[in-house]
Length: 234
Image 1 (tube, rainbow, N blue to C red):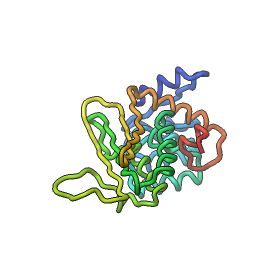
Image 2 (tube, rainbow, N blue to C red):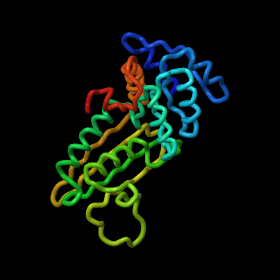
Image 3 (cartoon, helix red, strand yellow):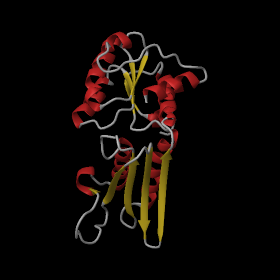
């Protein structure tokens, strides 16, 4: 993703200068002192260190890292009181359109007459499950159907579990090969089925969106934003 972000920055119109990069073991603060915004695609265990450096240097943050714990999410929200942050599970324009469509479909169809299932597939090296994008889809579905992630989302099925309970939401995670990212939300009713699907074939879609977010963030006040804000979908 780092290489893809650099390529997307160079291809932007006008080009967005990359003044520094950072990898494990390097001087993070020194790199961030050169920049007005940092784009982060790393691992969740690095987030608190990154936010501390960003607050110390006044650097804006575009965060595409997923798999955060509740405590790490709280740290992001706390840092946003001092610096502007775009925090999104997916920076693809298409995926954010999927978020919007899912919200409106759930609002219309509900989870009583339609059974809702979410599936996602990624490459074999992805370490968190379900994906951050799938988690966001589930959050949207929970909000619109007044359900709970902890109590109403069923992760996979095994054994003689009986009929499908009304109102529950199914979540299924697949891993294999070099799949960049596939996400589907299905609303299955009596005699009809609606499927909303997004398939990414290149990481450049995420990188381009992240660079777009970094440009948008310039001049914004401290606060926590997402790609729905960047794209004007709210």
